[in-house]
Image (cartoon, rainbow, N blue to C red; front, side):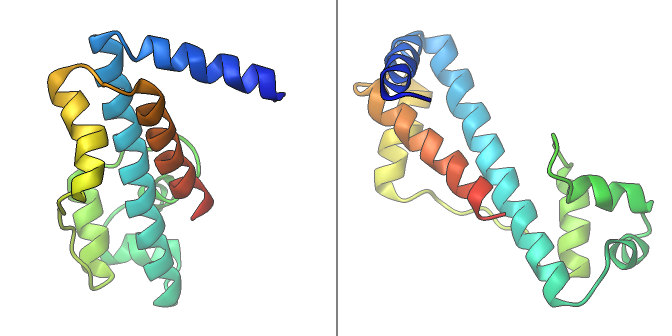
Length: 138
């Protein structure tokens, strides 16, 4: 993408984020994607470190192999928390929830709760960077 096209994209996205409904949906979806990607990547790394195949893992949680293959596929995924917890347990792990750092709460949580952002450009860049980090970590 050329620099001018990128600038137009960011300008359009920043304008779109001024709509409270769009802003909330964009934040929630960005956080969902980044969180699931990070979680699944961590589980897959643990599976590989444990020397387990996807079939081994499926047997360990009494699931069809397709369930585990889908979990670790690069396509659209939205695993249930139950499946994630079972896989984590089979890998000697557990799922936990952690508080976002204060700076990230200010950029992400405040706009989500309030339905507006004082700096939509910064918000868009932050959410895009989060999603990009989770994709490059794979």
